[in-house]
Image 1: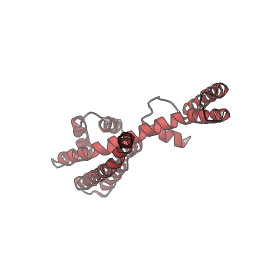
Image 2: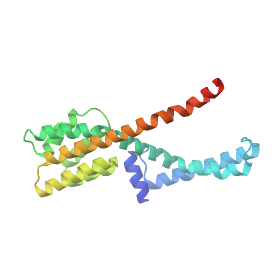
Image 3: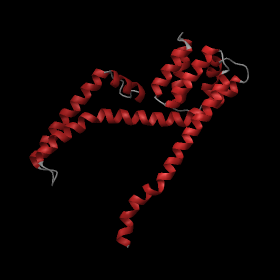
Length: 210
């Protein structure tokens, strides 16, 4: 239940369901897959596959659909945060250099961020602080929701700097540089795989020509 609750939070919970409802959805889709499997097996709709094998396979697929869907959403959210976070940290550093404290700087920066997941999540963090939640709790909650290592590192660094009375702006400069390096490294890794990825579909057109 705890793992499902964590997955729902980090995926944004698009269906607005509780862990119990998530499990119920899995069971319902598994049952639908089971029924479809019986139909497929009865009419032998998948040639070359033993009819009886379709029943457990389709039931399992139905059971895994909610998990797969929410896990994909979680990964997409992580990628979006990783892309947008360095710019937000740069804006925070600039705002802090004008003499504002972190809470005030965060409230000033959020409206200036481009529309997207990071802006929505930080808006929620600002609302939590205004409602009386302390900064450490609000930033930890933010890091839990977006599930990004960079966001977690940012939250921990700010909280630690606040506790020690250190200069938050220097901490954020380091965090922005680290987040940007990590994002660029992931892009370079994707670029390195691009030639191989492009070659695979080209094989189908090259072989007939050869």
